[in-house]
Length: 381
Image 1 (cartoon, one colour):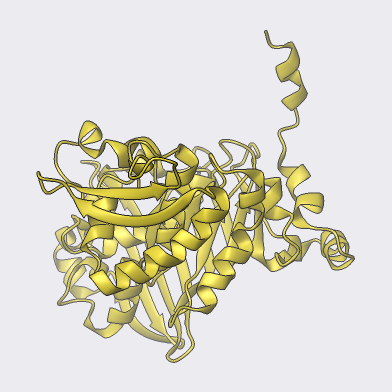
Image 2 (cartoon, rainbow, N blue to C red):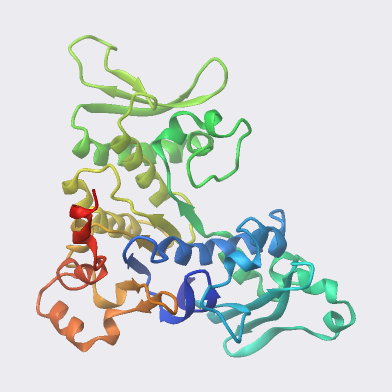
């Protein structure tokens, strides 16, 4: 299953948008255009679907409340709308729609919740029970096991969404950022625990594949493994070529930012089944390594039993210079006074023609995402 269409209204930067989404999507746009907020739409749906995660109220409050979520350009119709169309090659099409606002106590309140399967309505709210008890509208059917039985595949899919933005500093010192362990932390506070808890056979297979890729960026690296210290804390151990025996052994605290980020990125490609959301995977990596990331992602995906969807935000010219990236795999975010606009090259005949003529996304689309006043930085000090 994968997301093939998104419709959104009044969500953060986006007053309105309705876009097709491919199995591999690259988001480009200037700083503060809303790339992270776009990815957060899918994280929000994941949070709603987790019965232990607090549901709608917790998902909204953790983001600052309805007022913080609502687009500043919203006027006459202030409800927030998220609608996704999911494609299951074995089970057809699913649609999930959620429209919500808040009551006078600023508690999130559902205005509409709809689920359709192959154009047949499976769930439609508010219903008679909601009319009799408005408190029911503070919870989505997604988060209720007894209410989502008829569309459990949608729930499972949302729960499988995986957002990763691993930070080397957090991986090196997770307790420095949080004394207690946080499960499936996107920034890496439980990252090495997740690696270590993977079955030994599967972990070794993944580590060997990752090692072969890491050797390109760090040629001296000869061995890669996970071990626990005397306190039971897992560590990533790398053995580097050195003239003195054992002198080249290093753990994650001694790895470079680039090596740790590349390790985390590669592990994330193997971990999980659902959509993988990545923010600026090019950070800290050499440009020649970055240049091969799109093909690396595709190669890993081809060898998986179940193909994953990848949604990646990037500023990288090296990534977008990959000629395999087509017009329908790009979404450009363009800020405006009425919120950020979602623009696909598919809707621009000139851009499509240029890409078909052999130019790359880096040539045609990326320059349009540069801020108009960037040159003023030279004279700002």
